[in-house]
Image (cartoon, rainbow, N blue to C red; front, top):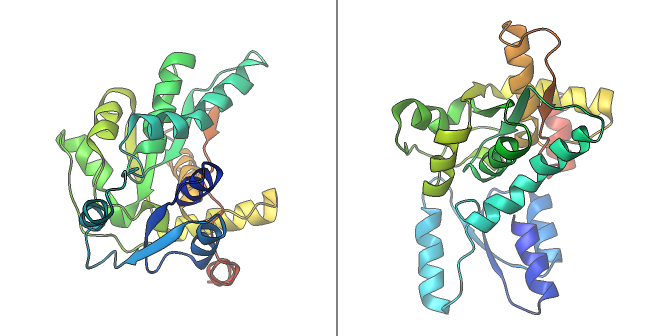
Length: 246
C-alpha cells in the first residue's frame, strides 16, 4: 500500500507522505522512498497511527488515504481474488475455499466480494496471527474488537482492529477466521522458498499456513479445490535468512 501510494503520487506529480512504523522492514521503507514517498515514522507500540495521521492531515491540509477502510482500497485489493476466479473459470473450474491473510480486512473484504459474485459457493476463510486475533474475536462477538499491537513476525498483520467498512463486509461474506502461529509461518516460508522458489514474507504466508492447518485437522474435505492469496514479498534478506535458519 505504501509503495503503491508513493508511486501513484509520483506519476501524478503529487507529494505523498507515508506513515510507517519505525520497525518496518528496511526493504519496504527503501522501496517507498525510492518511489518518491516522504516517510514519517512512528512507534507502533506506543503511538496510535490514526492519531498520527489525523495530526498530519490537520497540519498539512492533505487528503488521507487509509490503508484498508475505504471502498476504493477494498476494490483494488480485491482484484487479486477477482483475477484468480476469472483465470480458473477459463478452465471451467471454480474454488471451494479461498484462504486470505487478514490485517485490517481490506484484502479479504475485496476477495470476499469477488467470490460472492464470481464463485458464490466458495467459502472465504481469513487467517491471522495467533498473537493478534482481533478479527477472529470481532467475528465471534459481532462487534469490532480493539487489541494492543501484537508481537508477531507477520508485520503486515500487526493491526489493532478492523475497519468499519471491512468488518461490515466480513460479517456478511467471510465464512470464518482462523489463526496460526509464527512457527507455522516460518514453515510455509521454507516451503515457498524450497519448493516454489518464491521469496514470501511472513504475512504473505498466512493463507497457506491456514490451509495446511485445516487440512491437518481434517476440516477440509478430500478433493476440495482450494485457493490461496499469497500477499507480499517485502522482507529483508537478512531477516529472511534468519527466520529460515531459526
